[in-house]
Amino acid sequence: MRRPTPDTPMKIGTRGSPLALIQANEARMRLADAFRLPSEAFEVVVIKTSGDRVIDRPLKEIGGKGLFTREIEEALSAGEIDLAVHSMKDMPTLQPEGLLLDTYLPRADERDAFIALDGGTLDDLAQGATVGTSSLRRRAQLLNRRPDLQVVEFRGNVQTRLRKLEDGVADATFLAMAGLDRLGNDDIPRNPVPPETMLPAVAQGAIGVERRMDDDRAAEMLAAIHDGQTGTRLAAERAFLATLDGSCETPIAALATLDGDRLTLRGEILKTDGSEALSDLIEGLAADGPELGRTLARSLLDRAGPGFFDWKTG
Image 1 (tube, rainbow, N blue to C red):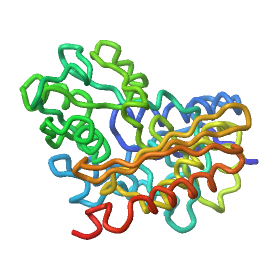
Image 2: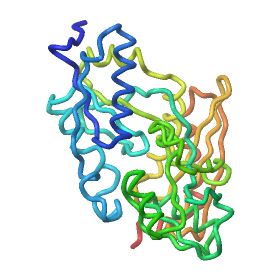
Image 3: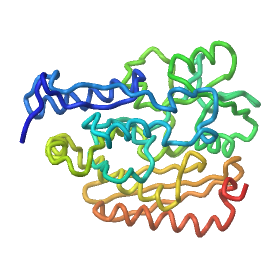
Image 4: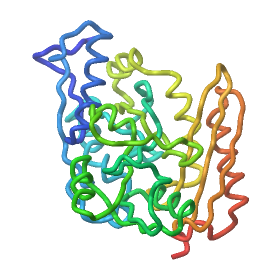
């Protein structure tokens, strides 16, 4: 295998946000350590995505999850970069032809973090309080639990969202615990939300590394840093999502956990206005994770009946 060198580095594509750069550099250091190479043998290449450029409109209005990946994947397909590092909760369930996503770094805390400047919890919110979020899942879960709340659109990085809280745009917001932990934002008042209260997004807390399908060198190198347990969990969760035809316009949540060779998958679907939520769990062999995900999704769809996702019917 021809190994990368500082003169001919392997190029790792990523978004340019502070969190995305941390994630790309984690992949970079894991590769360097696995092959005893200098970090300079890997070059982090920042690629601006449509999702980063347009921050004043809901994702569903401008194209959904692919807005955070499209330009990066185009660069990967064109050979301008060798690898692409993604937050897995941003990833569509299907990759462009010729690309493969089969490498995952160890998953971090998958829970949501409730953020209020006074350090309070979700249960502390006053009647009629305003919560900011850009996530249809979180919006639907909130309104299902607390229909008295007002929910407003909230996008931007951590500091942008905190400024909006300081300016009184909202009383509270949500971020991913994994992102806060990776950024080292220990000073931000946060309360982890148990999955029993708010089931997280599919693949939340996980980092994926994408490659070209015909790139044998990348395949061999990535195999050395792949975390099998994360891969097993995400295979179940993403099969659940794919069967539901999930997108940024569908409030869907799922979380797989492992106990030895056994896997438990919890899933939830909600009406976009939070008026109804259906949830269930399924257990089985971890090796059967994808089929468990598909079975759970079909079960919830059968219970939901036609028109449950009102976005489909207008």
